[in-house]
Image 1 (cartoon, rainbow, N blue to C red):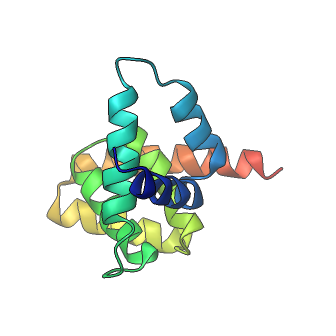
Image 2 (image 1 turned 135 degrees about the horizontal axis):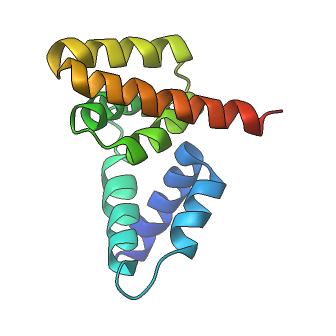
Image 3 (image 1 turned 45 degrees about the horizontal axis):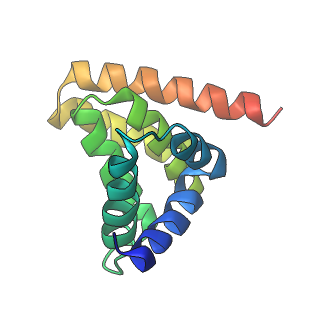
Length: 128
């Protein structure tokens, strides 16, 4: 493991997804899935999200679309929160999911709207 890149990835991961999400993921690591947590933090968040070629906001737009098309609701909920943290509005998130309906299929969009709506409700409840 590249410690410097892991640390860079951890900083970005926390900034995008929030400390509570990352702390939960790391606290639930065990000998079986610890290598995955290290890979995700170093490679996804450090190596890729840490590149200068795209702003975090743009990466969030892309992630929302791809994760929706792949029908990964758990990850989508996390990245809805991240998209808001990266400056996207709820309306922009909605527009991404509508675009998914056209190019990725209506069933993927329906599931994505459901997951995003749950994530937004959770966020609203936390802010009360």
